[in-house]
Image 1 (cartoon, rainbow, N blue to C red):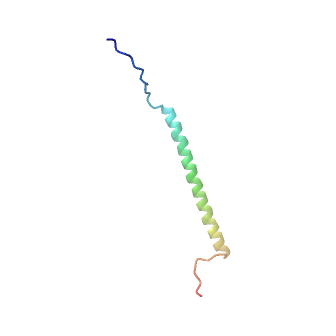
Image 2 (image 1 turned 180 degrees about the vertical axis):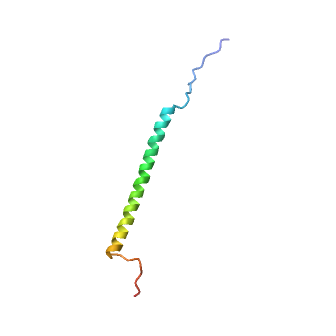
Image 3 (image 1 turned 180 degrees about the horizontal axis):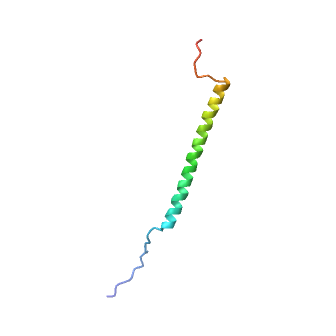
Length: 64
């Protein structure tokens, strides 16, 4: 009996260049989102202190 040859998919190892490109793109996207979050928080804090300096808001509750 002759054995039948079955075509198997040959698995290749990971491509180092492809993995580095994917990793660097993901890192840039995550870093950009994190930086934009910090810019928004900094803008909120700066506007709070600007309003506090102008006297438009206060942090002490006034007695009635």
